[in-house]
Image 1 (cartoon, one colour):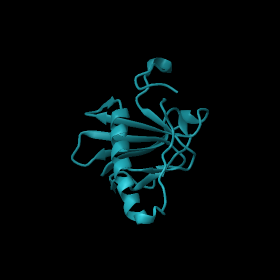
Image 2 (tube, rainbow, N blue to C red):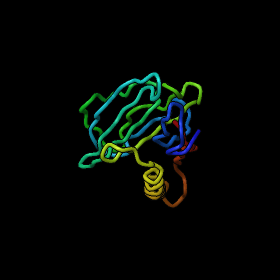
Image 3 (cartoon, rainbow, N blue to C red):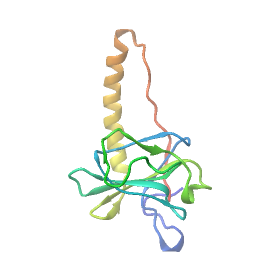
Image 4 (cartoon, rainbow, N blue to C red):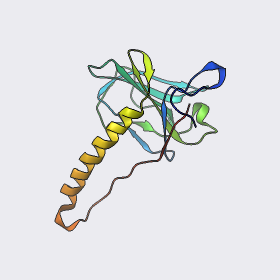
Length: 153
């Protein structure tokens, strides 16, 4: 689908990273922050929501959601809250279900992949510790999985 910064039609560049997942997969907020935009763009992003991290100069974009986010502009969102569901709206209609995720610092898009890798390492270590606590000594208990990743837009 394309790398961050890859050329696109009309002189655009790919400003994010795509996470391939089944339509309807839950999208959890990566940070605590305030919704600064909730909209629909039929040309590119489809249904999307933008969250400004609390005390940060970063904004986090979640695009191509099945439905508009239930959070309204100026809503406070806490890390881990469900902000939407993976879809294929906007220009993802022909590309299939995925989350297009962007990080903007001081209004400029930056490669979100390092952020996502850091979160993966953190979530893997905390979920492993949690699973150990939940399973106990017998090893019984649930498991957590993650979707495949690719990149696009």
